[in-house]
Image (cartoon, rainbow, N blue to C red):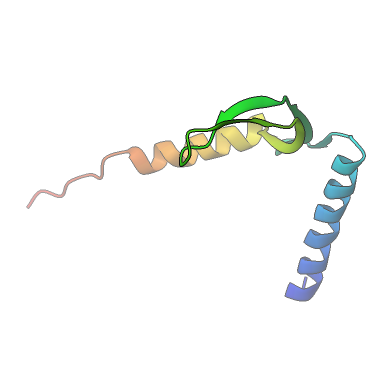
Length: 90
């Protein structure tokens, strides 16, 4: 597959995910993870410069939860890098 075609395919997938999230649907890529929209409640925050308290409105945020296969792959790669290198004796 050419780089241009691969770029078009990836952009098409991302567009479908974005449109699905806009409509409130979850998108699950089996073995990879789940994209979803999470509601964030309104809350009181403090401006660190002025020390004034103000209310932040409720909002919706995109979120990603990694699937078991992705977690295992990342964990295995991390363990591979954390093993001490064998020392060579002369």
